[in-house]
Length: 209
Image 1 (cartoon, rainbow, N blue to C red):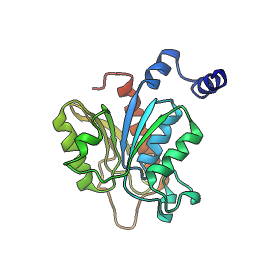
Image 2: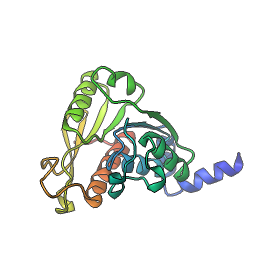
Image 3: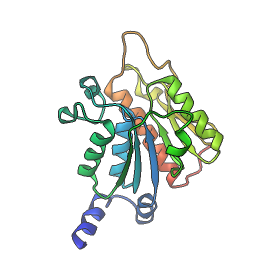
């Protein structure tokens, strides 16, 4: 037990003591475990968020490796299980819950019922809209969504904006796909960093205007 305590303390040693306890008691759900979600989850695990819900029904494919937090050993695995194994190697003191189903308007409320902070990280615009609209109707969820991070334009265009009560959107607000540009790891990861940082601020109850 003492060895485990020392290891956990070392992993989060850079955190301010009172912040460390707040994060340890914090919970965040990540909906979609691709370029955004897989990186968001790892960042939150590194800072010591106590519990993460990993939601995705897809499996790891070779085309995912250019921007997602997986490697060749994960090919063919459910993204939920692959990412859980990655997190356990990084910070085994984070509790990870997995849900390998497609999120719909019918099941979203039940899936995320125990999580106040939800990071939306879907690729499909329709899936984004379903999740955001369904959870906002609840009125208690704080949603950190993403829109626009393709290509290799300036990283400085990626911002975090409070759109209205309980909805924050990270990205450059450009169309999700641009012909011949695609998704590149740097900008996708930068946007994921914005989302993880916003989730952190919400857990710490930092007022956001």
